[in-house]
Length: 154
Image (cartoon, rainbow, N blue to C red):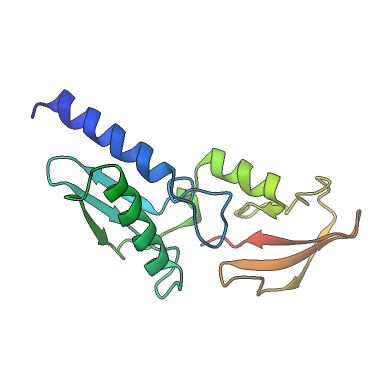
């Protein structure tokens, strides 16, 4: 298979992977979240990195990826979990950050103000460093009074 054939196959696989939702934040695909690190048609290998080592959703993600690949006739592709370098919120796509905001979760803001995903105000405060999942913190908007999760930077 030539370079163009590999690229076409990779594009097909990436489309399948983009249809797999993150089990904890179903508005995001695993591609939006940046969990999919590599798609290599030459080796028929997909590399994924969980959002953190020990993430309880990792097995579900692998199962859902496998099911999507099998359903698309791509059962000969291997899924490898790669832990180094560790996942970072920098890998969340811009589209993924917009999806988070629309879903009511503030996207990660490295060194910046945390804006309320409901009203957009930066008059916000942290309530708890721990939110609904280990990768989120609980915040509140003092302008509109709504609580919301902030996806932690790491």
